[in-house]
Image (cartoon, rainbow over all chains, first blue to last red; front, side, top):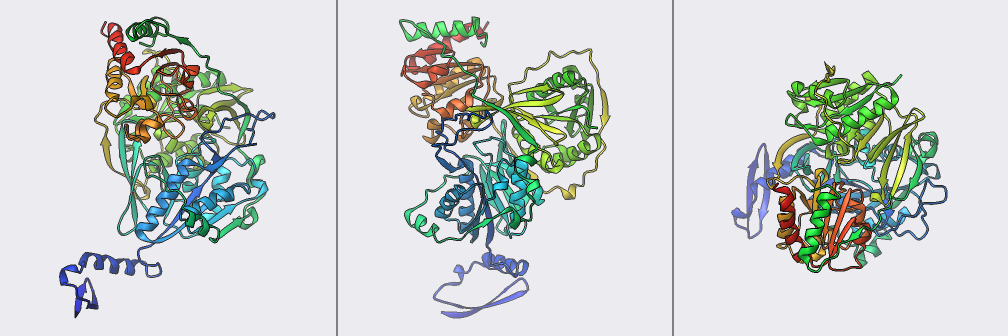
Length: 311
Length: 329
């Protein structure tokens, strides 16, 4: 044991060394620590404020039935889950917190049942939840949903926002990116790999595009849309589920957000569904008969060439 | 008043992507129905000579935005330029490809212009003078016919491989104009740090004309070799079901289905894939579907144009040999 004095940059650090040899002192880490403190005096050292947006959607196994109005789906008996792409976002939020420390807030919009999706995210490990719920929001288009989310988030402190790359219900992929635009922050979509810089000032994201992967860098705060491959979302543990019940879940109405009912909901929607139809019927085609696999293969090749004309 | 149809071309390193010809062709059809002009908008660096080519596919006019910050694509730079152009020129309809670029760009542009958008459409039409789009939702488990209200320009993206490409007419020319815009590079936040090229030389699933896909029936990663051999002969991309990806036999980028890629090739050959609803949703708009599976009860046969009930490990190599008779001619 002994006393030590270190000069890092312009600062002197005094300390007591407890049975450690000097090689255990990581000068780089200390320098980084002091740098953080000087840049962000009010922020808890090294932490990140993280938001994950969560949408509740019908489970992927759901058979979609069209309702009698011809414009909506039958929701009876649907099992509602967190949008699978949003789960990657929640997982990445938790991993970011585990790495840097900080707080994860999950935000969801929709009717009462959405509470369940938020509780699931809390059970996975998120710290608190905000649910935007108002009857006037019913029938909102993607732009209106983004405006409602932006109204909540603009007053929050955040470094990074995670969302799924699209909801597997309406397949629009607009709310997330529109939200970034409304907040005036950069977005990077389809993330399969992500790295936040040690100084927590920027993020580097791998984004696969047709035939290549582009590595993009953006300053924080930024919004990242998550693609499968980014991580493997954890399951909520039993203790996690118990703890989630006690975690804060705030509910916000339109009035809380300072939004007017005329800006959202079905009447304000700028895109209208005229009609829903089942997918075009595909009839089961020919089963190719033959004595041997070779005969069947030869007949298939002939049909693909002569009849279907695709080879 | 808003007037005209815009097709936003997509290029990479000075070469147009196939989707560009698809949306210019579709834009031409919409402009004809409306009795309006089709403008192709090309963004990039040093691409002016190339831009004139789009006249052959139906563009009346080509607007070229040439700037070093427009290559490679970033949402920041493209939205800034397109936002300025759309506000100045007020087109009625903007068509883009539902490629990774279009899906990144269209929502942000729509938000900037405070309008709605319709993503990944498979059909467009004009009804009572208004644009109507059909788009698969729930990954193709239902189709929604949509229209816009108080939302001009109407921004839409078209699913790759769906819109037919016009026969190029080399006699056609278009007026080419330089776009008027300002771009402050200091304002651009996201930057491309690196581009990692896929060295496999295979075409991306979403752009592929033909796909050979394998599922649980492939049994292991090595067995995909038989599919790759067939794919090489017919010029196809290789895809996989979720089961094959989750088993670690294929990379995530190969997955076709509700939590993978949505594909629309001319030919889809499903090998050892039972046809779970999530998989069918991702490839249901393929033009010709072939199923090869040992199990005659596999649901995939209900969606297939041609089926072979047999062991894929005997059928696929034989098929590879048989198709050579046609491809080697």
